[in-house]
Amino acid sequence: MGSLAIDIETASPFREPQHEDFENTDYFELVAVALGYQSSPGDEVETSVLFREGGWETESTATLLERVIEWCDGKEIDRTLTYNGSGFDAIHLRNWASDVDEHGLGSDTRERIDRLFSNHVDLSVPVGERYADQLDYPDFPKFEDACSWEDIETTPTYYSDYDIDEGILENSEIDDNQVEGWHIGTTWGERYVQWIEAGLQEQKSFIELQRLIEDYATADVRPLYELHTALSQEA
Image (cartoon, rainbow, N blue to C red):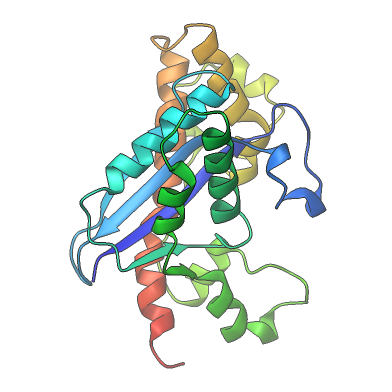
């Protein structure tokens, strides 16, 4: 019973989304896809974070989606785990795949992405049901809260662990010590692609930013397996 886990990192370089826009792919571009695979319950979880390798053109999106599909090929996938994938990850991956096909840049990309979600388990749904009394509707149960409620350890990502130029951090106007998802969505995802377009991949700050995003994304994938196991048990 192999289980795939998916979590995407995005940027909004052209239009800033409001709360009501988070299911509208026009506001988002794909930066990275974090993947996990567990061949059977209790086995070691294999992880990988695949990054965009070019600018915002559709060709770069097509290349990244193809790499995601290739990573999954040959793996026995009985279910795909996400956290709020029904409201974000699956929606946008499918829409980007359709765009790739419409531009003639892929071979049945949408169909192959659809197959990855043929048995999709969005863990935010059972979390919302189990902990409804702790939520003020329409509040969304945060992933970190869900893990805490189920006594699942998560690994925070701290800026101090990465050798990114201090001036870059200061100019980002992010004051937090710990990396949050919105930091990537509003700042670092776009900065990452700008640096690629400028040919700065060998620079220390680029390498460290990539490592930061990779660590943050991996930390969002690994606990999905423990969360699924916990939620599968009777309350």
